[in-house]
Image (tube, rainbow, N blue to C red; front, side, top):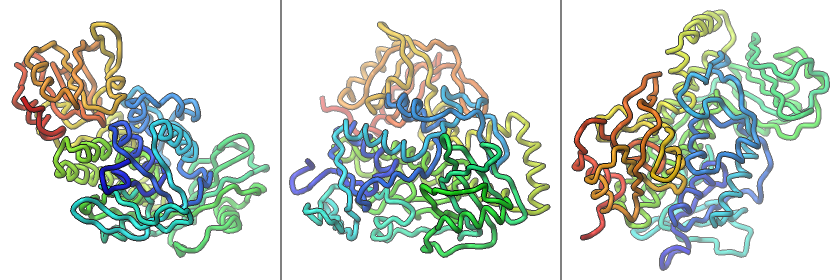
Amino acid sequence: MGHAGLDTDVMIAGAGPTGLMLACELRLAGVDVVVVDRLAERTGESRAGGLHARTLEVLDQRGVLEPFLAAGEIQSVGHFSGLWLDFDESDSRHPRPLMILQSTVERLLEEWAAELGVRVRWSSEVTGIRQDALGVSVELGTAQPEPATLRARYLVGCDGGRSSVRKLSGIGFPGTEATMTALLGDVELPDLPEEYIFMRRCPGGHFSVIALEPGWYRVITSEYDHVADRDEPATFEQLREALVRLAGTDWGMHSPRWVSRFSDAARQASRYREGRVLLAGDAAHIHYPAGGQGLNVGVQDAVNLGWKLASVVRGRAPVSLLDSYHAERHPVAERVLNNTRAQSALARPGALTDALRDVLGSLIMFDDVNRYLCGMITALDVRYPVESGHPLAGLRVPDADLKTADSATRVHELLHAARPVLLDLRGSADLAAVAERWADRVGYVEARSEQDRWPVPGGDEVPVPAALLIRPDGHVAWANAVGASPDTAALRTALVTWFGPPLAG
């Protein structure tokens, strides 16, 4: 359990992919976690449909990727508003999207969370929040005979676009209103002549039909300049009527498993932290689901926040470290909102948009444009602002092949424990001495790279550094250029900034 007078260290509202990933990150760091969710149980709704390269890398960093690969299907291509992209141009070991339903992602994350000792309480909606100097009291609307109020040191809202945590904390959610209505349903289509129809544009909007599994299809209809009441239930009949309007037929649609509605409204929390309350995933940002970025951004939020929150909870870093979560992740989601607004506009019907799509489609044929859009959609090109002038600083670390004294390994394998790593690629006694001062929280690894140069976003390569400090989320906090004397002063500054003061003595 948590500290004296508290029920837990961290309470997470929302047992979706973001909340579960955050819970796992915190447990790997030894933090006590309770996840609460307003639902009585999992709905089994399929929801989002894929994982991009950076999320696959994040799972690989934790050593849990294989079950996801086994449960999904690697796609050969991706898209930007229906214009095809070649993801093979990226520098990742897992460049292509993985088609896997959100329900499956949740099941696999929940199994991992259970192994790590995460507790999940269902039928528990956050209805009240009260902060003080020692923690936050969370009132729960619950049908269970457990306490209706729990105390935690921190509360993280991962409870979706209509987040109760965000609203109760008084955090603004500015953005742009919806301009269209989309319906989505998982149905049977016995009369469909082909198994894949992707974003076929029509005078009123566009539609897609995608095979999920034998006999079952996902139908998505999008109609512009009509916005449904957000509280109006989405029905199977509405989906059928929309498909008939757009496609001229319903292909014998029947037996819906799930029907839902979404729009191109785009909103972002004005701040990701209010005292002891933080936001992640859809609670912090909503947008048009073009390119399947939403679930991925949420999981990456969790991996950025998890190690920072754990360090603060365990007293290893100052509370100010949490401010870097907003500073780093808010701009990332802001860019996602902008690119999904662009994709929504590019999907509009009409001759003007047709001309714009023709021009952009020609530009995508250029490698640099394709690479730029792929990096943006996959988040492989995200660079956080860190105090280091090396070309790798702030970027995700390449998953390079390494050789240690006793074995062959990869960079991602060094991050399985979700601990920072000082990777010494030249065997410096000075760096080893510095690492000793942070030995309780930073791993020191001496190895050699199997390559002479490492890739960076944009298709370039740089000489392998002499050493680098890798954060638990896989981003480079500090690097020393090959041939340069070890900059131990800059290394100490980076260690203190991200992982707190050194051991005494």
